[in-house]
Length: 269
Image 1: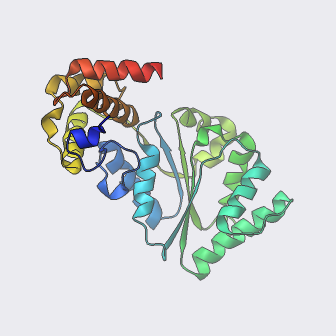
Image 2: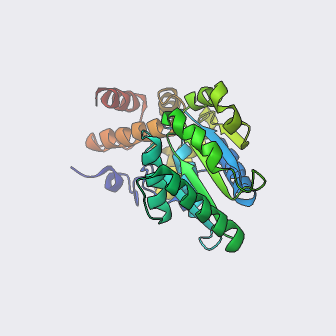
């Protein structure tokens, strides 16, 4: 079977999540996120970012981190959030290159000393991102507030980014998390891909691949968007599957029927 990239004259699959961040299509959500992340880069503090699954929050973070100067900013990403407080400290120590201890208090001190030294002595800004933060337990959320406390709460020595699904907002609104919530310097909730963005995105991706944008007819684009629930990830899956079906059937154009067949295949997968 001929790969659809060959059949449609593409240099690559334009809807593959492995495409380099430099080729990113900047949605409104992504632009809003970049502005807030750049603020955190210049002004250490706490950022809260939420989005439904597949709306591009993690990719937006990757795009941001790929553009950082490693001599000025150290970026650390942690995605395993279903852990105990002690396990969290161990994870963070490993990420920072610090010695792990069986005592949480020792690790807490080492981590704070590391952030303070990087900020005050080396003029290097550390940014810690905790992905899937909606799963963090109450002990970790409580400790995060104390981890951000330097010099009797008079300095911000690193930036903390909490990234998660919309339920994270509700979690932060709970009374026990009031002190941590008050530390939030920037926040953003993704609105998802708009229909106009979806059309522009498909045209942009097809041009990136070297193929003609008119492979997808106008009705097919409309149906693809209506089927993706504003999720960029879901849209990518639908379009990739539709191209595969089109190549299998040697169709030069993707129509509504092929989009619906792709949606059906994905729902059954």
